[in-house]
Structures are given as C-alpha cells and as structure tokens.
Amino acid sequence: VQRQTDTTRLSEEIMARCDLLASFSEEVGALTRTFLSEPMRAVHSTVRTWMEEAGMQVRVDPAGNIIGRYGASTPNARTLLIGSHLDTVRNAGKYDGMLGVLLGLAVVEALHEQSRHLPYAVEVIGFSEEEGVRYRVPFLGSRAVTGTFDPALLELVDEQGVRMYDALSEFGCNPSATAGAAYDPNGPLGYLEVHIEQGPRLAALEQPLGVVSAIVGQRRVRLRFIGKAGHAGTAPMTMRQDALVGASAFVLEASRLAKGVPDLTATVGQCDVKPNIVNVIPAEATLSLDLRHPDDTVRDSMFEQLAAKAQKIAQEHNLALELSPASEQGATPMDERLTRLLSDAAGEATPVLVSGAGHDAMVMAPFTPTTMLFVRSPNGISHHPDEFVLPEDVQAALETLLRFMERLEAAHAV
Ligand SMILES: [Zn+2]
Image 1 (cartoon, rainbow, N blue to C red):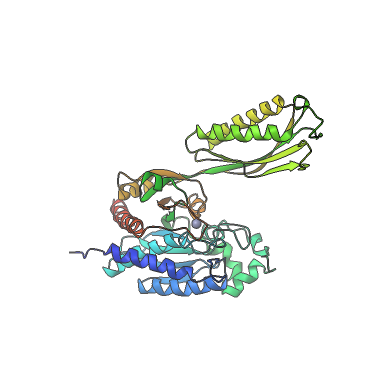
Image 2: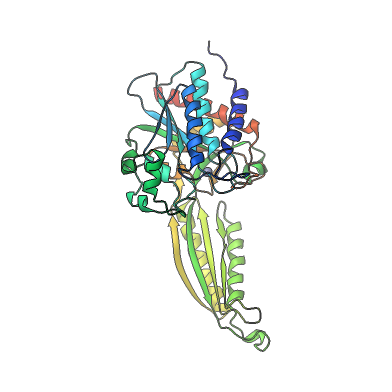
C-alpha cells in the first residue's frame, strides 16, 4: 500500500523556498537576479542541495541551466522535462519562474519519499535565463537546451562591458559547448511548465488553475500619420490636417475592434508626436501597434482589417499614412495529447486559456511535446514585488502534477 503524499506539507515547503530564493538578489530590499549573476550562483548551490536531497543527480549545462535527474524504473527510458526559469526581471516578484522549478522539484520529492521510480526519467530544469534583462535577448537557457542557441550571442556585451562568453566561463560553464548543450530530439518525452498566470483571468473566474492551449503570436508595426503643422490659434478647425487627431481615431478603433474578437489584444503603447509643441498642430503622429492572438490566421486577418481602417481614417482626416513592420512571431500551440492529460489531471472545471506572454514553453514546443499549467495570480500583478500566489493554489497545482504523472505513466505503458 502506497503512503499518501502530504501535498499540504510539500506546498508549504514550496512557498518557503520561494521566500528563500527571493533573498538571493543583486539589490538590497528588492529582487533582481539576472543571468550568471552572483546571487544566481547562490541559488544554484541551494537548488542543488534540494535536488540531491530528492534523490536527483545534478548538473549545470554549458548555458548555465541547472538540471536535476531522477532516474526511471527501467533502463533506456525516455525523460519528462519539468521546469521554468530562475532569473528575474528588475524589482521582481518571488514566483515568476521559480514556482515552476520548485513544483517540479516537489513532484520528484513526492516520488523519492515513496522510493518510487516511474517508467520514464524526470529532469527538473531551472533555466538560467528567460527574461532577457542582462543581454537584452530572452530565452537563452531554453535556446541552449533545444539547440537553437546562436553562438554569435556569445559576443554580446552587458551594460558593464562583460562579454557573454566571459560571463559563462567565469560562472564555470564551457561557452564553446553551448551549441552542443541540447538534448537529443528523440530523448525527451515532453516538457511541462507551471507558471503564474501574470494576469487577472483566473482570479475573475475564481479558479486556482488554468490549462494553457497556446502561447499567442504577435505582430508589431508602426503607423505614421502625416499631416501639416499649423498655428493653434489661426488655423480654422475645418482646414486642419491634424496628424494626432487621425492617430487618436485609430487608437479608439483598434481597441473597439479587439474587444469584439475573443483572445485578440491590440495595444498602442507608444505615440510620438511631432513637433510636440503646445501651440502647434501636430504634423506627425507615429504609433506602435502590438497585436496578439493564439491563431496566426485570425491575427493576420485582423491586422489586414486594422491596416485598411487606418488607411480610411487617414483619408478622412486628409493625412498620409506610412505603415512599417517592426516584428512578427507566430503563435505556439501546446501539444494536444499532453495538454489533454493535463486537463484531465486538473479536473473538468479547470479553464483552458491562452498565454498572452512568452515563456520557455514557447521555445520548447517546436522541439518536444510541450504543455503548460497556469496558477492564479490573485491580484493579476506580475513583474512587481506585489506578485503573489495562494498556498492552496500551489497545493492544487502540485496535486494536478502528481495526477498528470500517473496518467502519463498509464499512457506510457500502452
Ligand atoms: Zn516567467
């Protein structure tokens, strides 16, 4: 007879560990922990101890990812990867990234306490870099694991003038091997990431957990409305070519349109007005537009609609319009089979939602079947010290993961 796993104790331990890891920071009184920093070294030594206590063999790969391996019950078995990142933004919360690593670790602890091994190995990965703070390039850890780390990145220099190559060497890694750090594509059984939602949807639904169906793709463009400068007092209202008035009409239109399409977000975050003088009619207004949706065809079609609308608005206001692309990233659907197992494990009531933010899972998904679980952010706040999670939600996530492991075991046996 198997002993029941004490998920209350394990989830309390996860909360305490999040608190402890938050104390390893580059700043006094705030949590900032970037790629290969001194506090990351302290985190590694602490996480290594926890992993070893949970019966894992620990290694640090050439990109500075810490990986604990818990062997399978049979030789030559495949490996399930569970992880998230250990780096943070500046003045971060305690749970973004760390929660996913510590939940993976707790799953292995639960197995180890019962001296149980599964027909697949489990590796818990703490990615070294996800946020893109130090070298302004995100997902360095998961890129290395998936073999998509471009060696040219090693020449990037941080604000202090430190080359990534030297930072890796200094950390004890072999930077020349980053390209070869990757897993064999046939090795992993899949990748599972738990992450805080970082938004208000689960809180609004009063649900502790959500299953992620896809990570949204995004398209960014710049729209430059061009009119004519003029005197704020002498140019009659009916004879103006006010670029900002046209741009403003577009901002309202983008918001109106996006509200009518489920899962679509449209954000104008920047507006650059020229000449930007209090008594001069704006001659130019340049807007940024960030458009996101989990389905690439929907996003493309909404973009076409918005571009046509911008053109119409420009004409109505007697303005010229220049539209230039800034960046584009396709949507990343999660693996159907693993996501079904995760949904079953989480229970019927668990909502399925899309992720509006990028995660390591986005880099992992093209490489190995990937699935993702969100934990409610009670105040919807993230990338901020007020970010938090409820202990009972963490417990619900842990219990879901344990059921997922069982279901994967059953599916694996077939
Ligand atoms: Zn994160």
